[in-house]
Image (spheres, rainbow, N blue to C red):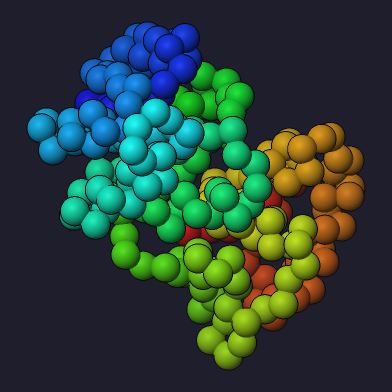
Length: 219
């Protein structure tokens, strides 16, 4: 499997390349988005691992959007230090399958890659993700909708739905909730209360409880 890595921090790029090569992947490293963009058309890649803030005419978001406009459907994962939920959602509207927030553990990278491969993630022009019971999540507007209405959500509830949708089919652990939403340790009981409040806004509960671990939305 061939992976293109766009990363302009040399030490990080070398670490990623060595780790993935040890796992059996064939890796091509690029520090500049211009040369990385051209490389996609010069040889086939199975996955793109793109930093957002990089050297070149385009940042990672802009590069992937341009590739999608050219018809390139190669699965892509963003690596980014951005933490704002609007910025992260922007990555999905550009055509990414997933994002990994820096700093991250290499094992997390391995698991994310394997998940993308397992689910056969590919780019789509769709702006909504279908959920159980006829619900839909609007990626660009970050809105949860049923067949009859748009569900009004608070800021934390919206972030929780975003995280659950992003990892749909897999468990979102309590640690993932507090790391990606609050940025600091939160007692699991408080997270359970927040999920309970979210469930009250949904007529048909599609959020499954994984006892003692976290929650998930099934595919």
